[in-house]
Length: 311
Ligand code: ADP
Ligand code: MG
Image 1 (tube, protein in one colour):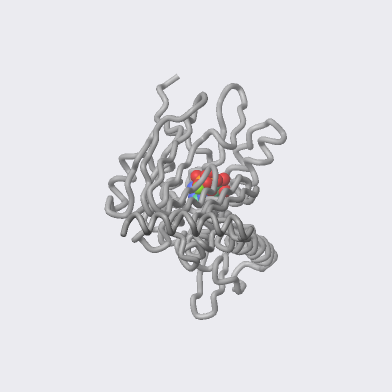
Image 2: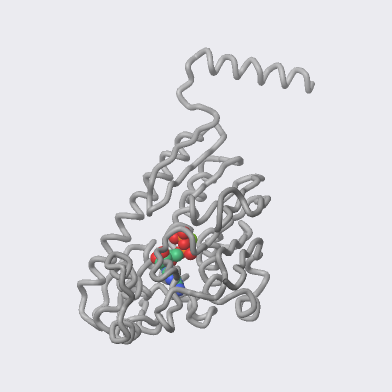
């Protein structure tokens, strides 16, 4: 029986190749999106549809974010602006974790990120005055969500939302949903420097934040792995490193001796990749001990932390 089945399978495969079947069994595609190389791989009868539809969905998400953020920035203080379902969901999840992390994860860091981007371009540190005024524009309590009509408001003009710590994870969740709809049981949704969602069992290397190669290899099975590090986007002034993850209370780049944090969230958790994306940034900001005190260990697994020696 077994032999018959394997012979049948072989014949089927030969036939499929012979007929020039348009859908390959294994399919993969890469594209640069949200500042990272996104690679989607799927094996299954509908692999190409799963991958192509996912890219369309993720590109539509990028458009929705840009459009909604633009309208939100143009609005007055106190004015509610209706946003798309995806943006609203990302903001809801972000606010939930802002509360759980005592404000360590905070999507209102936009103004601080802009200030640090300017510092990087001008190669000068922000002045104390600049830092003080930006502090008034950062804080998740300034962001208000109204679920009855999917609308959003900031209560101080100039508060700016930045979804860089959550959007890649959310996009990975969207792709995952499409993969499942297409019956994909073996696939990889890889948002490069941020979040990887494995369907089936995969071995994933974690990049060494200093030097080359891998610092660890993690076995991921039907779940998401997220890494946050100080090495992707940074600059130096007077030999000191300034990177893209901000301590919302001080509006300074985090300087707590952590170079990289990786977390795994199980696929059973709702919005698993989004949560993983949020939590890697959160643990990076909080440090391992505060994170352990604030966040229930049932939600996630800390799989790798690289701490720097004092130097
Ligand atoms: P990556 O972009 O590689 O996935 P992270 O997931 O750690 O890295 O997200 C970092 C990004 O999140 C920053 O580039 C910025 O857009 C945003 N960000 C920075 N600090 C915070 C913070 N404290 N809370 C939420 N988002 C942040
Ligand atoms: Mg991320």
